[in-house]
Length: 332
Image (cartoon, rainbow, N blue to C red; front, side):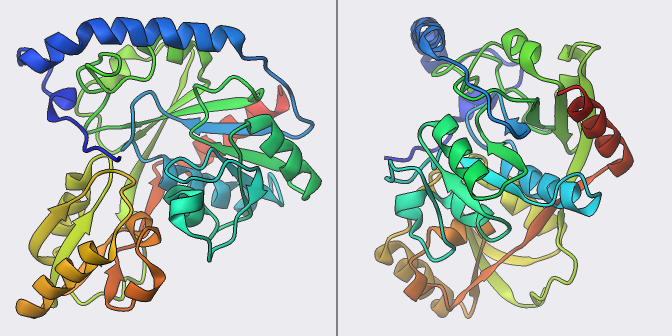
């Protein structure tokens, strides 16, 4: 069952740890032991085409999805690759087979993020990343964009990029479950070639990043040509790692938001969920508004009366990103 992100994970570094965080700390040590045992049994295999991994250190909500989409566009725009495909674990879906997904697939089966990626390029889901990479190679990919595979060692990566949200940073900087970290910060930085900071660095992440790691900066912005009417009243909803970030974006865009509902990250929306929201909207003469990722989890027969708020990642210095990629790929 999907869960909401605990608030204490992202408490201020200056505030004391609450009781629940202290009680969970011993389990973080057990998590680390289990992680080490798992990594010790993984064998790394290489594929004939370049693999670029876009991952994070924290559990959810860093901005990986808009980052990997923006990177895909950048690679094609500058002629680095003609057919970069997406490779995903398919988190949130029930599918265990390695396969290419279609835009009409069900998010409950293939996952919401892969379904969103499939709108931009061929997307493969695979529990075994190497098997997925082989299928991509057979289908004609000349580059693999690996979504959220930073902690997975089964497939050799030519470039590993860490995505960090500038506002939430690394939270309380503790391992799961007492904090949001999937692994120790130092261990993660040892395997990364670059860190992508999205938005203003409000938690001084830059000071933690070793000097040999390239820092790339970007921001999340509303897509050009937004067709939504700002005078229209909207009831917004989202099930993300940090749903309030969506609300903040809406307010900054001067959208007329009369109510906002938070759901758990990756939560599939039931007919009851949507009908309840639609009833509220009808009572207040409002429309429903959600994210592109949430939209993938809404049953297709219930999507007609729901608007989507499209966002995209914009690089602060596109030339710097391209120069970094060319340098790393040359040495791959």
